[in-house]
Image (cartoon, rainbow, N blue to C red; front, top):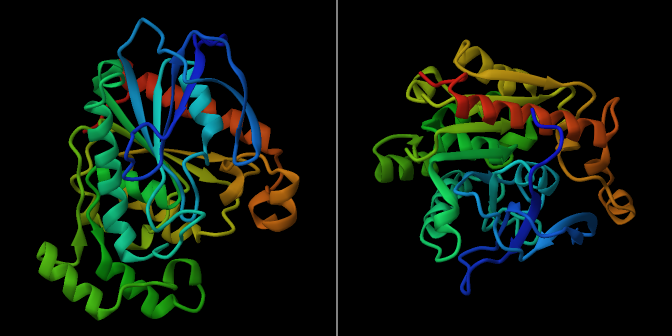
Length: 322
């Protein structure tokens, strides 16, 4: 792995005159970086710089966690941009820090992957950016609900009936997942729309995915994962205080049975993959600042290296799907 980055991190926000949703990108540039702030967190990037001249570059479509925003993993986006990747992050409608009206509901399970596909469509049609994208190297990465989103793009048939059945038994002990579990009316609508309780949003352009502490494992079944053929990396927290391991990361691991790579980050909690906390966040949202034995910088450095190594091995052919 290259220790010294070849590029600087370019950064642009709200790319389109009429955004369907706010969308930010980070990308390889050669202009010098200067100070930027993402939701109050300081960093460095070359705002609105020109792309480096030796493209096209692989692109990573990023999906943030529930009630999050497009800057949730800017630290990872900058790291990848400095090493030759474009990272594009839409902010999901109805499931973000300003509007959480649909968070963790079946409507988001349907809408999120469509927004990711639309974001990719828009980028591939963008006058300035389209030519910078290597169409044969399109990847997706997501955290928590975003992890479920990118799994759906890879071909996971999300089984809402399995979600409902799990919550019928575990509703009181797993409120995060079961607070908005589908009702019989939801299941009936899915039958009318899709012909069954399964929600599928496969995008054949996605050739590898990274799922960081993915949510909604309760909706994963053998049949639902049978058609996922792309290389997959799962990044787990050593102590996930939000998602029950046995029905999320461990459940995916059992179902996939060697078809994906799993990495557990020591000392990490569910929110350790968010940016470092500012004093304001620490005072008002202290639960977002909790780690479990490692400082957040160390956790981030581990994830950066693991994710970059995975994408490099995918590109070299060392890691292949089935």
